[in-house]
Length: 616
Image (cartoon, rainbow, N blue to C red):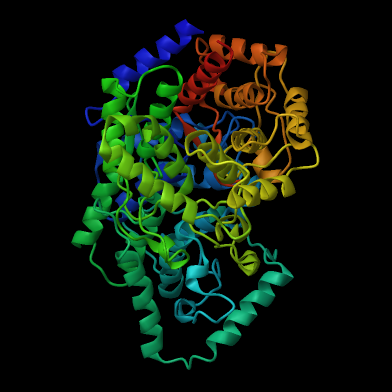
């Protein structure tokens, strides 16, 4: 165990950037690479080396049956990912229609219903480039931007990461932009007419209510233009220094197309700066290029700094001090949209990406605070940052007792009725098990709070109300029930809930029932789709570390299942199969998952460090 800890510490020391950060690739499916190829070609930016690197990665991900998939055990593949990949390879000029692998992809697309059965974002991309008509992908008029606060729906009822996508989408849907060049491929033969009604009765009812409210605004060209202006100014006011919108690739690409729809020339400085910001988000590996939807630099650096200290590296070590100085430089001092629902708080949180300065979140804030907590003895700067971050974190607790990811009390259930695909998953920011549990773990183990505190009691009560029948908890931002269970159990124990509590013992028994024969744990991304635990039938390092860490927190002495999990962690890194790259980070259920290249080091290091500290 000592040898494995030392190996990881030595590896991390060699990978640290000069500014103290760690920069690992945040990997996802082909969507972001396809978006970038289509954007560059549409803007006549023919950077062939860059486009070729993106296309090579896309081509390498294709399955033998012609499909692309989002995770290893998505057995039939993913139609939207396949359409995006097929289209991008043609756009890039990397592949020809008559090549065997492209014919296989085409056959699969037609067999699964064609372009009309793809996701909303895929349809938007296809409409933008003239492949399918501008049907009502988002049947909400641009005038919705002008709805008052008292209306059933207001634009700022959406959570921030939804707003920055909805604003450009409303512009594009209104303007019905079609942008084609001499290199735009024609894949209209993949259209199969569909009469299916994808919108529920509730969605149609909700759309009608919006239209009823908008009728109070007499339609004039001036009002219509004002709504377009509001959507445009909303985007431009939230640009980061690198030109990206909220540090996300997808929202930035949509923004660029929206600006084109509003008449901006392709050479406008806002557009060229945004493209440069996007290209800076690329990660390069083995001749291939991958577009990250966001860079995970702050998240990775905060977690790794904490993991190193858990494993025995002192807060005064030069490696930890360098990382600490980087984290201090990334603490937010600007007011973001979070202040609309939390007006009394002052800035003090941390964001996910290196370029993020206005969109802090709970997870990154607790991660950064854990990392700098032991450093408070080494300087006043750390003490001030820690207190400011702690105050912001405490102020963000929802009224129901839990913690959201980004914005306080942003959970208006009526938004789940929206006639937008996936609205129930991405429109709001409710309390979640993982955010609530991880926040409790920080507050209990690092800030000295316990269940005698009323707010901690509210959080524990929220967790207990949301435990699944089988003893697990669902985690929103990781895969999935193992992640949520680890968060809840370690959080409740940290604030003083006894290990013998029935809810904790029920969770432990659930973990023991799903342990694999090799001693590890593994859960499928399908869990995130069906909202019920689905075994992976294999073990992954991060999920095994979460389960082991849970058992360590809930047991006074080492147990046999715990030791089998430790043995898996000690022997797993020598292997190099698909389990090491399986995505265990969640974003959009059924459409977007992340493989954090840092996770194979972070979570095993924390679990091994906790084992040594607790049991000697």
